[in-house]
Length: 259
Image 1 (cartoon, rainbow, N blue to C red):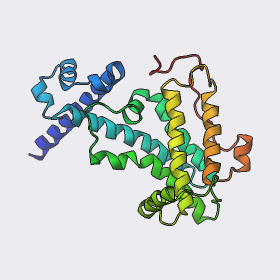
Image 2 (tube, helix red, strand yellow; image 1 turned 180 degrees about the vertical axis):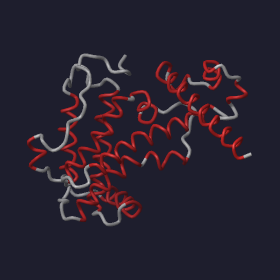
Image 3 (cartoon, rainbow, N blue to C red; image 1 turned 90 degrees about the horizontal axis):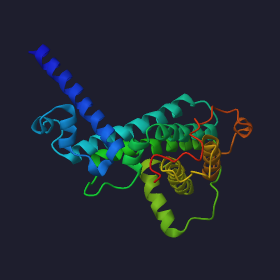
Image 4 (cartoon, one colour; image 1 turned 120 degrees about the vertical axis):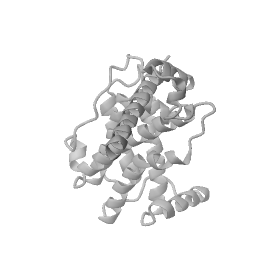
């Protein structure tokens, strides 16, 4: 019985992977709004009723794809953090940001699913929260390590307004009670700016504006590190700290979402 059960489980894993792969192909071709279980089943030569045993609804399939995408970008960010464990804090920050950016450039449609326009009628369940936090928490760990070792300076900018301080205090209590509240506020702002820059690139907003997109991103990530209080190392200033981001196509090439 255990052999039969194992074979069935392997078959289920394989079919699930095939469904997701076809769904990703359709996302790239048609977008999330037009994704349907019937079209996926038709392309795989399955009856719709058979596919429903794997994903009861389109939203269940979307959720699985969203979790996979968050886990994928989170995994590369965490690997970059681990690989630079003994580097200067600013270099570690840049490496984590760079890993997320490079993944997004290589997987634009999956990136669009998690950081693009919301899918009408879809509401992400709680299951997506932990995977969605992985990149941000990798950046938090870099800043916490810098603070623990005395290499975190004061963040740039004006003193926090009372409502901002309240939000940052709540977040600090939840994720990093050892960090100064001002550092938490700067982290949130920098995290949003990192993904804003990535989104501009992936969605074609840099076309005919920025051509050297990899070096531009590294420069921006270094500036955001300083904004948080991570002082650039001498190696980072000379460009020898870590390999640069993979560069994208020339700036006059439309992005996958540029119309």
